[in-house]
Length: 300
Image (cartoon, rainbow, N blue to C red):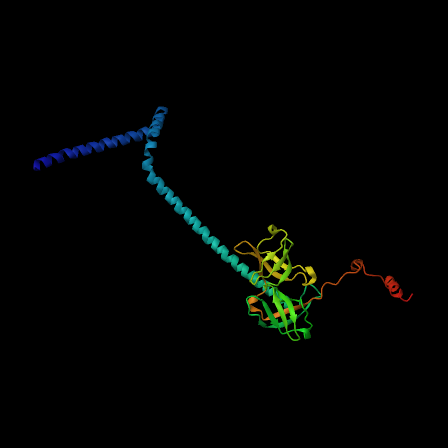
């Protein structure tokens, strides 16, 4: 047994060295063939490549898969970086939005302190909110100003920033204000910058719907909504809010007034637009001679 094992080991060693030498010679021959710059050798290399390359696809599959995995991982990293950048930009935009809202409120308060008004005919009286209706079916509040203060039905009320509602019912010392959110409220409005005329109809929600738009395609979320002054009930140019879209795609108005904190309301004295009898007098006032002729006419 020992002799057989020793004989096997004696044959195995030389055979292994022989195979190793043959392999090295083959590799050296392939190297030399691949390095020879000759047209014939080049054609031979092309034939060998055409014969072996299709059959080595199975061997290259793991390498190709590994390369694709690395590329996918790099793509995921780029997407993750872009996602972080977008989140950072979104936070900055939210901060800018809050800053814009604060500036808008500050501007409204400054205008209030300076008693600035666009229409010189408009004056106002401020009243304290005594109570609200407390009913989900009727949106109204009660003010501590009434007929003794010259309050009249239909006058507009604001909270210093946006339109809140209109006077509907006047007592001696109190007045009832129907809010824009009430189902009986109908406010003619203009959407800026498109200039579309619409009707803001209350439906007992915090965001009344926009109805009777002539061309809804011209209206976008974020557009400014102001009173149009049609009908002569409200003065034109009062801020109502901004256009928003509900989940169903219906256009609504995000009211500018803070309905959660209605403590003081400003009642605008509005007696309607003064009719123009003679348009020419707007451009050119009457001269003294013409005035004297008119005044002397009754005496003649």
